[in-house]
Image (tube, rainbow, N blue to C red; front, side):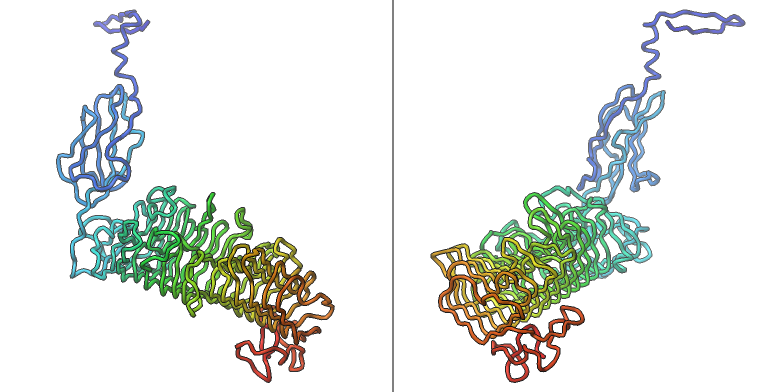
Amino acid sequence: MLLRYYITGFCLIWIILPNNSCKKENNDFLSVTEFNQVIPQNGEKGISLNPTFSWESANNVENYTLAVSKDSTFTDLVIEERGLTGNQYVASKDLENNTKYYWRVTAVNKNGILDAKNADLYFRTLSVPASPSPNISKYFVSPLGYDNPGWGTFDRPFKTLAYTLTIVPGSENDTVFLLPGTFYESEPSIVPVGVTILGSGKDVSILSSKGVGNAESSKNSFVGTLIQLVSPHDGSPVIAPSQGNQALSGFSIDGNQKALKAGIWVENRNNVTLTNVSIRNCYLRGAVFAPGMKEWYNEPAYYMNGIVIKDCEFTNCGKDQSDETLGNLCIAQLDGAEIFNIKITDNEGYGIKFIYDGFFRNTKIHDCEINLNETDAKWGEDIAIELWNCGPGNEVYNINCNTWISIVNHPEVFPETGILNMKLHDIKMIDKDGQSNKEAVEIGTPGVEIYNSYFENKGIGIAIWNMGRKDITIRNNIFSNSFIHNNWAAGSAIFIANSHDWNFADINIYNNVFDTFYTGIYMKQESNTSYMENILVRNNVFLGITNANIKLLGTVNKISVQNNLKDNGNSLAWIAGASVSITENDNLIGNPGFAMTGNKWENWYKASSSISLVIDKGMDVGILYKGAAPDIGRWEF
């Protein structure tokens, strides 16, 4: 029952009403039920200038209020419609093109108001092509600016990079300047050709994003990347790259704890420079420079030219996935690229890694510092530099890293041409915990020279696999361990494995130092239908070898072991195992007379005086030397 009272004159009259008599009257005091906004969807682009807004119907509602604003605080209202009784509204006036709007629907009844569950959605109106602006070459962006047509000057800057790039026309050599501050970007920045982006410094101009698309989209798609320089290719390997003629410089990208898929993606575009940029905490990759997907196992018709990446930092932008580990800087199909002064630090992913099917010509990677995780579930430890399908003229040098380098080609891709496919030199690789069971360098590419490098505490020094079976020179390197590694490759400094029906030939091992290994050089010829021949082992020093100086499994033809030195106490035979046509002469045993002071990669293995045993005891292998004959080991006295 419901008890009510009425006052009539001076009398108080109480009336008792039955329960069912209050049902309709109580509707005025029931709360509005929850509802959602429907169209436009959150983040939707290309919305009509007079859009239709729709939302779900709520119960117990009297009417609705629609608010549309250019800012998320709804202080700058462009539409405010009250008393709407339906769940749809068509804008009665045109909105501005290429503009971001927020919208909110509120349900009203006598008991109060209730915003939609997903209130404050945003959308962007239809863009029109950027107008030619021959009299404007500079555009400015500031976190304190405003995204509105007609802005973009130094005094009235735009607010976001993404919006700015919808205003700036391509191919006019314009520059976008990022003023100091942190930019909160919620949409991808689509960079036209010919447009350069210059920040105020990588510690001053910071682009921060919690994602601009689906971070879980295809790992090989640019979708979800913050800055996109993508030219059409239609998935075809035979469409030439566009001419970018542009640079990105002087800013940082913060992926907000992996919320952003990737920082920068340059696809099918020539002449792009990336310099003085820092990218951190992206979900899959830091930056990508590649033409896009191509036909596998075949050299592409086009390469990207004029790519320069320098003075950049990448932090925690790689990713372990079920089928592969992704890198911080991913590259493919580059000819004449130069990548240098790069610093990469990651606890999960790789450093510099190929994407798609790789392919490189005349590409230089140098003066880089790469520090990665030394434990990896797939490959033992993460890879500092991994390149597939290296053609003529590539070079990797002056690299300071703690994990391995992998150079691999598909079979019969880039055969010998007289020009080396890869020069790898002046590498300093020191394993941090000393427990590595991986090789320092994996070679699966013919036409390679490795020299003037230092490798410390790796389970294997250099591993040469089937695809890298010809024309390989390993010279003037130091392989040094603090203890003996005995693993599946016999803990060798150099491991050569032929497990297919391919022929290995012309492998030169000159003037190296092998210190503290279970096996010095291990040649494993498993196939009975192919051969391994013309292996030249000359002018090397073997120290602290406990199993075999040179171990052979299977038949190796024409092996020459000459003018090498092993230390006092090494009573092992020079060669253990089967061979045909052995040349073994002028090898020495004794104390090499090394300085044994200073850093091992600098002075430790140098002769201490002109009477050291290694002086003038080598043979001429085509390397410049002083004195009457070459010295044995890494250094000339």
